[in-house]
Length: 299
Image (cartoon, rainbow, N blue to C red):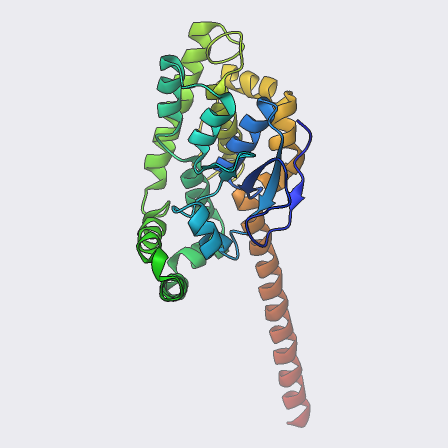
């Protein structure tokens, strides 16, 4: 498949003849879906859904994907598939084999997004402020309550979404998440050693590899922040390096560079906020010094 084309992100599209992936570049689960579609040669277009502006809560999207989660797939036949594991199965066109299911159950047991956001909370002041801000929680609640009143048919769906968003990521312990992710990585290493590679189940790159590669990519990016490093054994690092050479990885994740990781945008905003506060502090210091000099000159 060629590189995804972006459709106008205004409403569910009618102008795109291929399958449409409702997508955002820095979503872990969307990266899995993109890679599975690319790996299987599915023609699709990506429609960007803006998570910073909470577009995933828009009524049109909640009707498409009642959990309000990204990604979701509208197939060329008009069917809707609404989570990454189901999208992977749809792309492969068959049920998971017992060996694939065992690996996928392991890989979906802990979300590396939790590792990312808890790492960010520990290292990025801006994210820590956002997480602890009562105003942000109040704003989210008010937004959902307003959407409920405007869309009474979605009242129950929005209620479930509010409960899910309140419990996501930050109710976990960073050390617990780190330990669970490390256990997963160690299992993958043992699996590669047992099968002799180059992939998890032997010679063929399978759907479990799609998910494992996306997860390991995120783990390696989390390690760059140093808050809760996960050890990647040599065999796992070599496996990830092989996978990065695949066209599907380049099209789905690699071409987006640092933007394909959730903390990048927050890190950049954190740096910008630091520069702004530093500039304000310098300006205040200069003004204060000027006042002192004027007073000294007048005395």
